[in-house]
Amino acid sequence: MPASRPSASRPRLLRPTPANLTRLAAALRRGEIVGVPSETVYGLAADALSADACARIFEAKGRPTTDPLIVHLAAARDIARVALVNDAALALASAFWPGPLTLVLPKRAEVPDIVTAGKPTVAVRVPAHPLFRRLIRASGRPLAAPSANPFGYVSPTTAAHVRDGLAGTSLRAVLDGGECSVGVESTIIDLTRPRSPRLLRPGGLAVEEIERVLGLPVARPRPARLAAHVAAPAPGMLARHYSPRTPLVLHPRLDAAALARLAPDEAALLLRRPAASHDGVTDPRLHALSADGDLREIARRLFSALRALDAAGWRRLHAELPAGAEGLAPAIRDRLTRAAARS
View 1 (cartoon, rainbow, N blue to C red):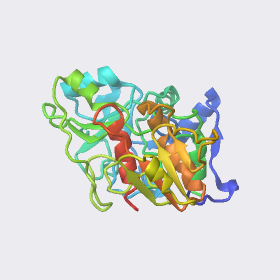
View 2: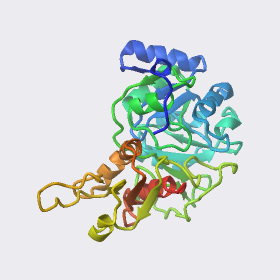
View 3: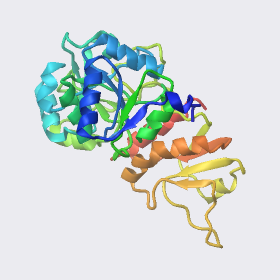
């Protein structure tokens, strides 16, 4: 885990009281940044219509301005405030918002270029976390919010992750909304050509569900692996992302023979709980994301487990990749693949 600054410079964790929500809404209207909970991961929010406020997001995270931000709204009816809407977008918004779905649409002129990496499109969604939506409504602003972590590091799924990772920055407060229920970022669909929807990032909503509503196939191009200097159409498309400091090696499967070859200073992240040894004790180097391989549980626990293993001092980490092309398997595989890119 990245070294954090002295505790005195850490942002405060605020309980979701009416007074604190009012305080944070006022801070957002003043152009400050605020840590916010969502069902996917914790975000670093600012007024999406203020270029100066959004610049503070990039500064605090160390994020390149070629990586655009997602604009979050309190309700689907607000989408026309920031984007040009089509029937496909309205159908998906009706079916899946609030929820872990982001739509890329032509942007309105009011949205600053810094939010969209200079592109004529904007990524937009309505989060499912009720505290985040309450804060958006209280601020009276659409809020731009990428993940609330140092750029490129493992995404945060608790308020404490945000506090520790962004200590020493201009972030002063994090709204504590508990642990994230989905655990991976939203699915991003490009709807700039509504009859030819395209997947830009797999995430917390299965693409099959989107196809069912649209009655159209969603193109699944080979996942983009962009360099940081290339302006991306949506966030989460860089080759290296979500990465622990500890080298991470990926495997289609970690069977008993592979696990037997682990060095004493290596750890393995497994999709399901391993069988106990003959004396009933499991190997402390083995860390399971689920008892039975449930993909929702794996996604919810993935980033938190990567952070914990990264902080434990292992020399190298190994992880299994989920098989299949349905449900949350593509999103989990995408996050692990980008997390291992630095290795």
